[in-house]
Image (cartoon, rainbow, N blue to C red; front, side):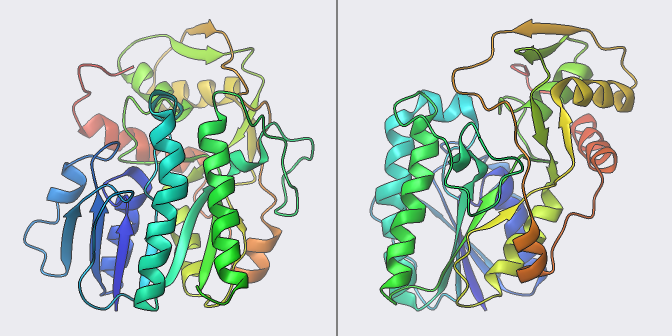
Amino acid sequence: MRAVVTGGAGFIGSHLVDAVLDRGWSVVVVDDFSSGLTENVTRYAGEPRFEFIEADICGDWTVEGPVDLVLNFASPASPPRFLERPLETLEVGSTGVKKVAEMAIEKGARLVQASTSEVYGEPQVHPQPEEYWGNVNPIGPRSVYDESKRYAEALLGAYHRLGLLDVGVVRIFNTYGPRLQATDGRVVSNFVHQALSGKPLTVYGTGRQTRSFCYVGDLVRGILALADLEGELGPVNLGNPQEITVLELAQVVGDLTGVSVSLEYSDLPTDDPTQRKPDISRARALLGWEPEVSLREGLLRTIEWYSANALPADAV
């Protein structure tokens, strides 16, 4: 079996590469390092089942030979990155997804598309089931990411209804773990790096907004479970339904790092959602999936990994 992982030098993508190789498959990674890291690719040097193509999925690229599965995880996902590159983010969710879909069709491969809980926007339904259509500001700054993912779902849904493509869509909720970059801009990476660096933890808004955090290993299990379910479009929510406030997360990070944390408050970014919690009933029923790693255990693994790796000079 042979898989293509676009965005395989990224946080989730690199963990998917590990999992697919662990299955005994061959893997081709397509990435342009616009948000991924070279070390997530060079770590496979000498692995005969690993191939790398440096390319922007919106450009001209090809994969030679047979392909059984395509995992499309090529997109900036951290707010600082997609806000810095708004046009590129929109293009990767439209032109890029179309090119990946066409490649999957040509190869007769199943495609799994990374979508996001951001398609729900500032939710008026809580927790969020897949049937909820969302409440997204289509002209706000975050829309470049939110709407690119909504468009990708619409495009792939059309391919599916036309019988052209075997595709599944995963809506990913907040995910954390090793290899999440220090400068990623998401709350777990911010808090862990600030705590380990002896800096105040930056809390946006009141800190009473909620999130639900899923360990990356659990997420990868769910993605591959949907990949194995041929003919199933979904979408399927993948996330941890344990909901906590940002202030509670700060306390847990302080406890696990052994740091007496101080908090520094900042304005809540525009359109930043105040609630986020997945309804995972569909994932349980279709995939037999639910998270297994507790927040404390996952954070311990994450903190240990960051502690073992030098903090970059520009750590937040």
